[in-house]
Length: 404
Length: 198
Image (cartoon, rainbow over all chains, first blue to last red; front, side, top):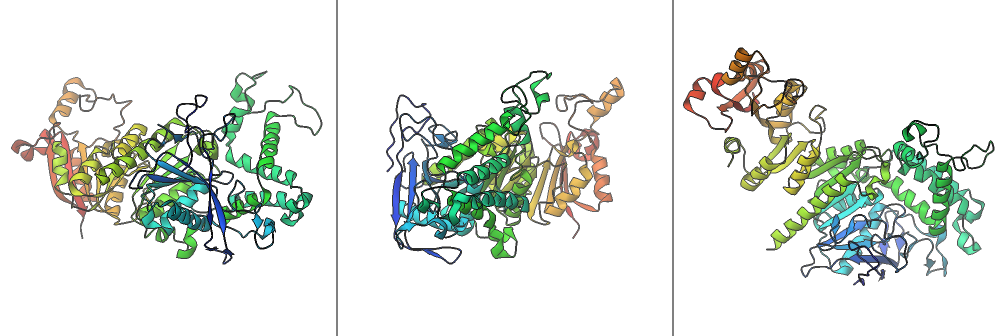
């Protein structure tokens, strides 16, 4: 069990101090690529108490740059809580008074689970580029192994946004009898050419960094900082919306009538440099985001995560017909999209809803008006969080009624 | 039980698939789920109604009825409901076609504008009828396509739609012998059970 202690210094609706656990698996995992991972570790955090019948467990799946640390704090002096602290905690949407939340770092990650920055037991060196390409399906298979380890037979719900939402859909397809509800937020049934194009720019910027050393940078005691920064900068643009950027970088009114007229063109120093330095706030923000990210994230993991996104398409086994992929799913579905998300816009969620309806499945779908773009799924947008909360409250009521 | 639900529920097969176009807070679907064990989907656009549906445990999809229903396959539902929504649609005739494409049969309820009260209001005051039941002024009403029982009968004939049952009731959803004789004059709410001719 994860140790959870409340501290006076944390907000009352926080899960408080949490401690990750490492689970080691010796049973080989055969991957979609045909390669085999002989053994692996998964690092896991849990919040809330598992009931005696083990029916109140929910799995939270992380997106591209997330990890197992979804809620609470690791140290008393942590400045920020886990990545989905907005939604996980006592009384929050994923209410830890009701649910036992399981959150893991996926295989290929760089936060403690086996990945390219781990030591390959066969060679005694870093895996680096030798770490096999992992797909969403492989993640879900490894999550099912974890589930068995934890003694959980059926998730009350599997929940995730973006790449996490794709894992949710895969759960409903691969393990139909092992989840009650699939909650998939800001997702797409598969990437568009434009999505893949952005991923390729990100990958190319990493691979072409002179410090990349064909992925063996750790052996050279260096890392492709510039490449990773660029990758994150371009990625970050796709997570925001035009309107979100205008609002974020358009706070200075100056000569303008209203901040809105500024189009988010706040200057960094108040005047143009007439050089190729950073002039606008948005530029310096992107640099900062890229810089911070590059210090905490493994470049090979970034490559793997973007490939997992590119390869995701559950319809491939069904001649392109996603509705057939869902034929055996017995869970109920909730999908949520956001109006200004141009990475996975509402139309992409509507495609999934259409195919779920074709498969005769039970589905709830909301389209949330929000300015924040793709990032909205992580933010406390009232209508979204309210619907999400109510849905999970209802799921819990059904659990209780079913048990009694 | 609400009297209109009483009328509607007798046309719903147990364990059938029911689509409710403009399902409101989902209470009708919830009722049918409880009593008939239906497999339900509701379509709704109002924020609060959608939240209520979720609270009621009713499957709800945020979708505007004035846009396409092409995401629904033909004959994918047993019954399609359209209760007190017809008059608020931009193309009610198109939606009636869609109902009977998606469902094997349909149930439509609407306020009967041919009711004597509406007629008298217009005759006496010379203004668009406003009542407790239809409280909006002409310029801000969501009800943009009023019709009468006779109008709807004519539409069914024109579209070759089979009227399985036609019931009219008062605003409390009660029926009586005189409403059966003069439905267009005395009925306040019309309840139709319709299908395609085979």
